[in-house]
Picture 1 (cartoon, rainbow, N blue to C red):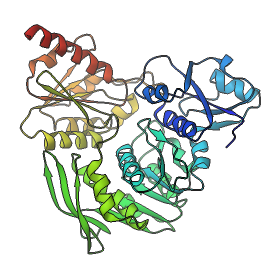
Picture 2: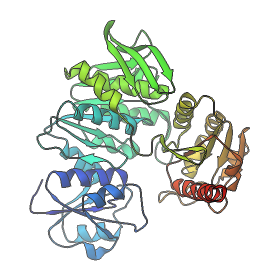
Picture 3: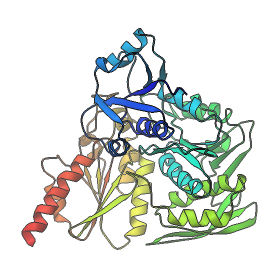
Picture 4: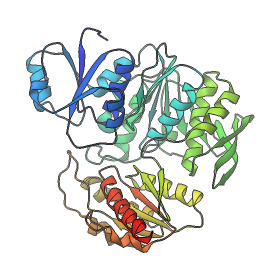
Length: 443
């Protein structure tokens, strides 16, 4: 780390990039960055920290900078290209993170699903008991002076997490995602196994995942779950409209009764992983209980608001397993209400690869609406459309446009769950505008 340089982030509004920028800023380093001018949900934190954000322009690059390049951008990006031509230090996001975690008790959280929620929960809990720095994939980052712990989200995409060597790892699951990069489940498993052999002290893995059960590694693997074979087991789980309550056992010994104000079985499992890490770091269990009960969630994960007589939930779910978990959480909290899903498929390759699974998960809602497929910077087109997915959905499948969200006005005193990793929020805003006009008219 260098106090003389200015750290320039190319793609600073990316969820991991904005979090990393905030950490460096907290640590007293000079930080700036560039990105698209369109508003993103990550930029509020940057604005509050008064970090300078400029539109992309190669003129942003000059002597005295250290460039951190977002993984969404190739070396042909004008700013990255110019920085390399000038001989400036250039790090990829994951490479820089690998250096940053050194010198702390570091915990990396990986998995095809659940890593952001688990990273957020672990960061909150450990911050309540000891100085903790953290990087969460919802754009939240904090660099705490004299931190004992460093908690970070470890991304398996393109094997980026292999640039990090944590003390501990939490692995929530191994699933086939990112079909634009991975060849299949065996390829994903090989990435996780490689990373597991870079972990220094121990791994906490979900016990019901068949791939995680196969892990071969030099450090101990502790499994968490609801079965007797798990090292950390949740028993007597009671799920209600206010959250979940459960007992936790480690090798048959009761560690205590825990309460969380979160919904869905996946959040019980995420909490188990956090309790397991805390146990091995000899953190007082009563303190863990208090912090778990106090956690409210992370951005874009089951984020709720009320408008008129409707409950609107915003969630990042973009894989069948995540959709299932989100709808399960909605049913737990609102058992007597109609659940309407509005899903924006994310990338053409994922939609093709997981088409039947998407239909199966979405059919857990009472009614399903789709938007057109979100085309990312990585994939601008493909040989599939939302109509193909709609044909497999038995609970509806009508395709909504941002200009006409009126079909949703047919529902009253119900729950609408907007899901997707692209720009599904523009559909939410359009719907909310219709609702607000309707409310004004009725008043």
